[in-house]
Amino acid sequence: MIEHFEFYSPYYLWLLLLIPVLAVWLYRNRYNQRAYMLFSATEQFGGFKTLKNKVLPLLSLLLLLAFTLSTIGLARPRSVDVTAKTKKTKGIDIMLAIDVSASMLARDLKPNRLEALKKTAINFIKKRPNDRFGVVLYAGEAFTQVPITSDHRIVMQAVRKINFNQLFNTLDQGTAIGMGLATAINRLKDSKAKSKVVILMTDGVNNTGEIHPLTALELAKQFGIKVYTIGIGTNGYAPTPVAIAPDGSFVYRNAKVEIDEKLLKKIAEETGGKYFRATDNTKLDKIYKEIDKLEKTEIKELKYYNYKELYRPYVLAAIILIFMVGLLRYTWLKSYI
Image 1 (cartoon, rainbow, N blue to C red):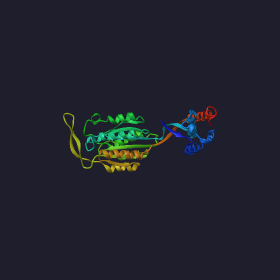
Image 2 (image 1 turned 135 degrees about the vertical axis):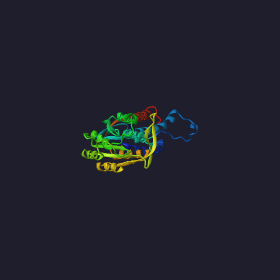
Image 3 (image 1 turned 90 degrees about the vertical axis):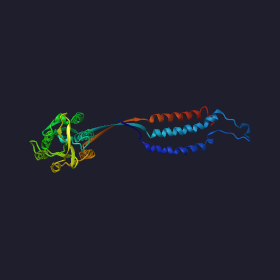
Image 4 (image 1 turned 180 degrees about the horizontal axis):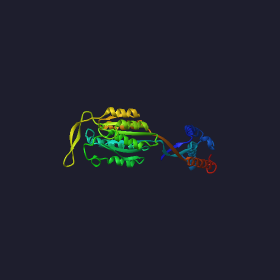
């Protein structure tokens, strides 16, 4: 709720520019308002002032104040409470297909590729409160971690909990890009949303799985699903886990970064999406910001206005002042004016 102050008829406030003119006019005509007598000498009256003499100038000030208050009243001051409610008119369903193979623990992104991806994905979800999300994880196989839902709390909690050790405990599973994409498409194919999007993230090449990526590509085209692909990993070599030590920790060695960019570009281009390469944390963040700009959800905003009129106290005060001036002029000061 937003509250602010305004004037319904602000053009009346221009009348306030007349106050200096009225002040000068009242000052110059102050003696025309008094009864007076002519004396040949006034020394005997020097320094003699009555209470009425002191009160009389206040009448002009009261009149000016009454004019000011009545002018403000004419401008109709009021407070406005604005309550805005948004209604999603055309939503977007977005599936995040996340590669969780062992190479995603490579440390060319900080602290590693998987953790950097999780942080950026959560920020992306937070910025899109009107869309539905789901999560698919894949390595040698693929499964749905969270089906498409509007409960962002559940989605973000699931993304935070993604952990290589809990999901896959071997290093030789491979990367089934086709399986990951096909699983995400299966979750979106029956969606009634205006736009259906898959954000496919991987740091490798398709080397396993029962479904070929090109087959999954055809499925995406058939169901009108747009695919944004992100290749994660620096150019050249990166410290990558190659073995598991007896204590359960990973043994890292520099390994060549291999990403099938040709395949990822083909999937993105043929489905109306776009391919990105994230070689560090900053670029990964920029990629999600660009996708956020490219996929806009149409929102209908309804605003409710509650007006509280504030002119009455100003008008009432002006009437009271005018009444006081009239009362003083025609009672206590009647013989003096």
